[in-house]
Structure formats: structure tokens, C-alpha cells
Image 1 (cartoon, rainbow over the protein chains, first blue to last red):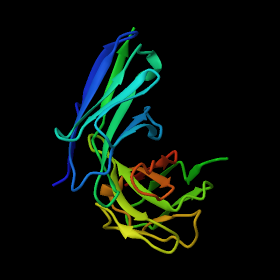
Image 2 (image 1 turned 90 degrees about the vertical axis):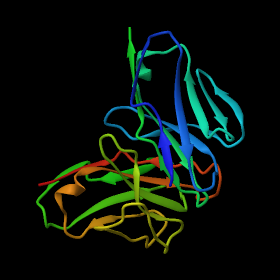
Image 3 (image 1 turned 180 degrees about the vertical axis):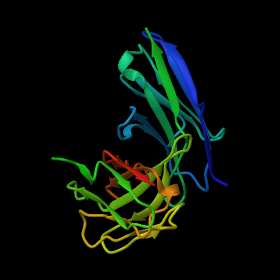
Length: 109
Length: 114
């Protein structure tokens, strides 16, 4: 079966670094996506990885290990506005996205 | 450029009623999708369309139908609503290529079926 696992909730301190992990099992694999979703709003695209390694975009970085079926999203210099849910999604062989339930990140001052 | 719009923003519906959720995009994207999002669950694909004139079933299609008469519009119809269809519904679109085909989401419709 297809499955995406990520922690339900994490708490971090403003200015700190947090790593959100995601493990995936998909039928075929065409990449791993991370989206951010603020409460009551639509998901917005953060990153896409298809090759092993780290992709850096400003304060956000995303890592992929295809052999381990594992990805993480790294957020640096946390700001209060980073309080949101972070959704991990794997793209299967039919180019459909399989979504995790999301990780709610709570930032404390 | 508006991107993707959805209507209505929210709706309370009596069970058994018919309801159409509207979705329009102005990005000339080939592919469009309907998802539902429920607390504690990931986004679940209801129906999708890879190009105008074609549609396909997703993970949870029962009780829903779609049509794709043109590139811009992708309405979702609940023929006879049931309380289990209470959810937040998101429409999304993508260019329709392969691989890094990023999906862009509308603002969502919050539907309550009583």
C-alpha cells in the first residue's frame, strides 16, 4: 500500500531550528513535495526533491534519501509566522500525490 | 491574476440536497484536482482531470461527480449530500507535466451537511 508518515505535532522556540521528518511508501516514486498550510488557509508549495540530497531555499531546506524512503524539512531562524502545518506528499508512478496528515508546528516566543 | 477561485466559501446543506462546488483557474493549467481535507487525515483525492474533456477517479470518488468542459472550470457535484461529506474541499491545478508538477490550491470550500 501507499503511506506517508510524519509526526502529528512539534513545538519549537522562536529563533531556533526544527527538523520535520517524513517517511514514505509509494507505488513507484516521482518525487517528494513539502507544502505549508496556515490554519484556515490553502496549502502552499515549499519544495520538491526527486534526487538524493539537500535542497536549500533561504531559511527552508529539504532533504531526500530515496534508498531509505525518508525526507525532512529543516526550518532555520524560526519566526512566529512559521506556525503552521507542514504537509509531506509523495508522487507515485501515476504522478498522483499521496499526502501525509501533516505536522502542526507550534512556535513559542 | 487570481489563480484559482472557489465558490462558495462555505455552505451548510441539508442531507439529501444536491450541491455543486465551483472551481475556476486562470493559469491555463491542463490538470485539475478535487481534494477533501478532514481533521487528522491527509488530503484525499476525489477526482482529477488531466486535460479538458477527460476526468478520472481518485481515492474517494463515491458520491461525487465532476465534469471538465473547458480548461478553466472544474465543478464538483454532490448528487445527494450525506453528513459524512462534511469536510473542507480544495480544488487544485497544475501545468500537467510530469515529475515536478507543482499543484496550486484554491482557498477551499467549507461544507457542512446536516
